[in-house]
Amino acid sequence: MEEMTPNNETLEQNLENTAATKPIEAAPVAEIENNEAAPVEAAESEAPKAEEKSAEPQVDYSGYSREQLVEALRRSRVTDIRNRFSELTAAMQQQPVEQPAEQLPTAEGEGEEPKAEEQQQEPVSDPVYDAFRSLYTRYRTLRQQHHDAMEAMKKKNLEAKQALIEEMRTLAESGEEQVKQAMDLFNDIQERWKAIGEVPREEMNNLWQSYHFQIEQFFNKLKINRELRALDQKKNLEKKIELCEKAEELIVEPSVTKAFKALQDLRARWKETGPVPAEQNEEIWQRFSAAANQIDQRRREYYDQRKEEMDNNLLAKQALIDKAVELTATQPQSTKEWNDLTAALDELLKVWKTIGPVPREVNEEIWAKFKGIIDRHYEAKKEHFGALRDEQNTNYQKKVELCLKAEAIAKREDWKKATEELLQLQKEWKETGATSRKVSDKIWQRFRAACDEFFAKKGEFFKERRTSEAENLAKKEAILAELKSHTFGDNREENIEVIKEFQRRWAEAGYVPMADKERLHKEFRAEIDGIFERLKLSAREAEETAYRERLHNIGGDARKFVSNERQELTERIEKLRNDLSLWENNLGFLASSKQADLLKAEFEKKMQGARQQIALLHAKLRILNEAEKESEKKEE
Image (tube, rainbow, N blue to C red; front, top):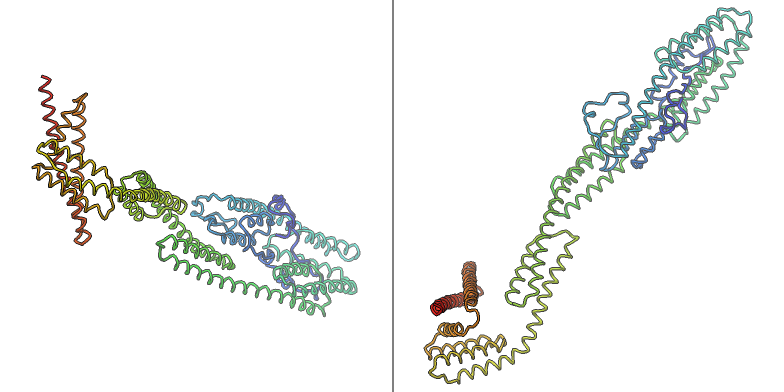
């Protein structure tokens, strides 16, 4: 049935014409010999099988892209698709991960209603796959129309051939008076028989036997002379020799499918050719059969070899599945491991695509297994990197905050405290996790620039400071010598003012070299303490005395000064208490070691100084309250 469609009529070009095309006759022409013709049963055995008639050249679609597969379907003849569609479907299913998950129909299932689970599947949005599916839907509709038209036409052909058999019966019974006229009518009936197309297969044998019987009856009635029959048999012999030669040429045809298809045409022509001389009938038939058998054997060997290759391909693809299962058995822990696993699976997919087709009955199952492994890997990888991106974004925000703090510290000049805070920021930076590669270097350069700016300023400051430290050392040595040689009188207030002046000058003298700092400080502090001891004054009393003097000499808005002073004193007390609490807490974390003991001593010194300062500030508050009450009494 497929041969009736013109070669240039593709699925894209006027598919509707396929259903209206008239079929060509596939039934054999009757042998006209009585005893020398081949029997009807033998002739029927030569008729090509339904599946052999539909054989077509094989096409290797493994190298086609999905768009090329759609184009191949579009350019195929409607009558070719039944066999070719399964190859196109298999090739479409071999495509990479973006392959639509929906199962494509197979040629064996055409005309059947889709299964319930297939009806329930939701369509996948894929323009290429939708185009492929649309072409196949058009093909099924036109194929059914074509099939219905063929069946109706076969019935009409059956009726026409039955009428010709009746004409042949009438001609056989008409007698042998006018041989020439009877032969003309006989030839006309034969030509009209050949021109009629196929009939229903179940009627073919009975129809053929009836037709052949009437031909024999006709020749028996007319008793055609043997010379005429010999001439006709000679012509038939020449035709069959030519058919044998063409069949023998097909033995060396490289394409097995092309050779087999051409053989089916030769077989049909053989059946249409009349009988040959009886003494050559068996010989010529054996010659044709020998050539045909070799072609058939080549075809069987070809498909046996192809089956073996597909079985080997199945084993190879199963090995790839086992390897993929092995690779994905353990989930990666690092980004490198994830990327390495992805590369390994991609390599397996490339190898998969180089392996040829497998048996059709397992093709979808084995592809689903392999594709499922890859899909699950990519889903897990997507989830992993999604969580990683969230963590990296959080880390990025933390590092931005560290940059802001470092940039603020870079502007400060309280070198010791600022250095401690900046070193703590650097420690926090190291403890903070990684960020994405796109911003990692940029955010690090920002943080490092702030740190470099601070330490550069600090280095410059201390470089200048070391230049003046030698001069400051000489000043403080002179102040200390002057303090030691000074003679104090009996006036308490004057002595306090002198001590305050020495302290002011000492503080204004600035930094001295670190090697001399502790020595000078101890000598100066010891001298001051000795003076206070001699003068029966304590440092606290001196501060209190100076504070009273300050309150006594204030002018302007005294109430406002007192209010501001009280607030300042209160805040300083609160700050010192907080510092004291922090230092006490830090002491609890220090382990017993030489370095820790030094730190403890330093903390103890700071804490003692803080307690003294708190006591002095409380004394100042008390003095401030007394001064305020005294001022209120004066106003009354």
